[in-house]
Image 1 (cartoon, helix red, strand yellow):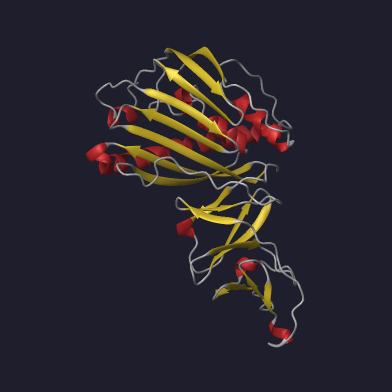
Image 2 (spheres, helix red, strand yellow):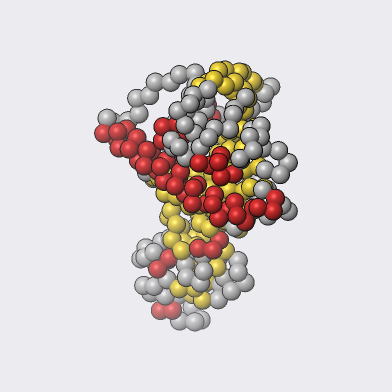
Length: 338
C-alpha cells in the first residue's frame, strides 16, 4: 500500500478518551493516547521489549505504559522508565517510532511516511463557519481507496443503486465540463435539473437552478457540491484512509447552509445520507467480491466514466514518486446521460 507521505485521518477526536486507541492505516499499526495536557501522541503499537501492543496499556501522566512489563514511553516514543531496572538505572535507547500527529476539524490526523511532512492536513470546507451546519459519518468499506473515490464522484450509478432516493430513471442529457490540474480533477455539470427524488422533495421544493460539481483532490479526498444559491448549499467531503488492500475507512463531513431551517434539514438529511452510503457499501462489497474471485480488476472504460481513470493515473504517478510537472489547466466538455 503506497502513498504513505500524506496525512490520513486515523480517528475522530471524540473517539480518543483516557484509554489508548489502536488504529491501522496504510499498513501501519499505531497506538494513540492523550497526555494530561490533552496533547495527542501516536506511537508504533508494539513495545520494543517483547512486542506487546501498547494500545492495551494505560496512560499515566504523559506516558503510555506497556501492559506486560510496565515499560513507560513518552509522546516522542522514548523509553523513560523500565521498572525492573530500578529508578536510578541508566536506560538503554529502546524507544519506539513516533508519528507526526495533528488534531484538526474534529479529526486526528497521522502522517505515516518516513520523511517529515511539508504541509498540514486538509481543511474541510466551511467547517465551523458562520451560517454553516455539519454532521459526520464514519463508514468502513470492503473496497479499495480508488473504488471508493470513483463511486463517490460517479453520477450514472446513482440512477440504479440509489433509485428513488437520489435520482430516478427519467434520463436526461447533460453537459459535463472536466477540468484538471496536476493534483486535482473536477467535473461541473451544466443544465442538470432537480429530479423528483425523495431528497429533492424534502430539501429543494421550489425548483431552483442547480450547480453541481464533483471534485477529486490528491491523494484521497472527494468533494461534491450542490449549490442552489446563496442560502442553500450542500457539500459532501470524504477522506479515504486505506486499512488494507480491499478495506477503506471513509470519514465524511457533510456541511450545509439552509438558513433558519438548518436544524430541521439536519434532522431529515442525516438518516437519508446514511441510507445512501449503506447502499454504496453494499454495491462496492459486491464489486470487490467479483474482483477477487476473478483474480483482479478487468475493467473497460467509456467516455462517461469521467474521473476513475484520472484518479488512478494521478495516484500511480505519486506512488512512483514521479515529479509533478506544472501544466496549464486542461478542460474538456462531453455529453453524459443520467
